[in-house]
Structure formats: C-alpha cells, structure tokens
Length: 236
Image (cartoon, rainbow, N blue to C red; front, side, top):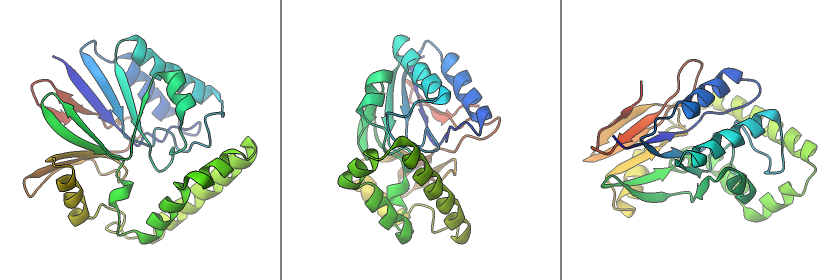
C-alpha cells in the first residue's frame, strides 16, 4: 500500500554517529511503496552554509539523492538549527525546499506542515532571536564570513541555546495552543504535523488533530507514516 513518511529533529552530527546510523538504516530500507518523505527541520544539529563539506554531510547528501533515484520525492522545511540550508543543497540532493508553513493534500487529507518553533510564541526571548537570525540581510552577511569563523559562531550559539533551555520551564518551550489553533483555522485545516518540541504525540483538540514528531535518540527513530487508506501512526 502506498504511503509517505514524516520525520524531524534528527540533529545529525559527527558527535552522535548512532543517529546517522539510524537515518542510514531508514533510508536504505525504505519500502518500494513509499512515495514521499517529508523532513520538517533540524535534520542537522547546525548548518553554517551550503559550502561546508564533511564526510557526514557528503554521506547524508548521497543518501537523500538515493531517495530521488528510487523514485521517492523528498521535501525539507527549515528548522531552527539548519535554516541556512539553501538552493545548492537542494540541487545536489534533489530535495525540494518548502516554505515556513506548507499546506499539502496527501491521500485526500489537507495537512499543514511546519517545523514548530514559530508556534512557541510564549518563549519571547527565543522569538526575538528567531526573528533576528531569519533576517535575510544578516544571513547574507553571515554567509560571507570565512567558513571556520561561521562554525565557531554556530558552536557558541548552540552552547548558549543549551544553557538557556535549562533555565526555561517546560511549558514556555511548548506551542501556544490558542495560537496554534488559530494558525490551523487560518489555513482551514484540521490536521497539523510539526516537530521542534521533541514531544512525540498525537493530540486531539477542538475537533482538530495536531501530530508532534519526536526527536531521534539512540535506538529510537520517530517516524510518522501516513498510508493511502488514511491510517496515520508512528512507525514501530
């Protein structure tokens, strides 16, 4: 039976080879009935520009290209860690880049896709930071810096982000339910799929379904499957 997969928050890096191994296993063993794979952000732990090359990056690019060669269409939405993935990456992998919010119709279902960080509006400090780093002019200036300097800056930002998370409440880092429902109403959908919060779950709220993709951890890959018969579930 035809089906499609949704994943996010793999946070691939050289420091966690077990996550790369999980992703390799997923891609290499993808079923012939698979039509599409949607990656809803944070495929990488951080991304400083399409010009960076490493054994890990080359390996992941080749894996994604292999999906296209198998006839599986792959889509990518930017996360808060890899928002600088650009057109060069798209050309080299045959992955289609999606906007911040994307409305799709899949197997008769209207579905709204997003990474999820834009829904966490109660975390005002993060939203200010998010608005700053998504400024196109600042991104262009950053990408003009030497690669080594960009990597150092990204490592400092990541370290500070991890420190800040320890000081924040669990609630403030979750989506704002009222805002999320309003966003679903704006796009006229009753099904939303997102990642970012790492809280794998299927929520039923006010006649709407909100599916949260989990992060990938050692020996656990959070993979959502939507089948042609409308069955939607997390793959075991």
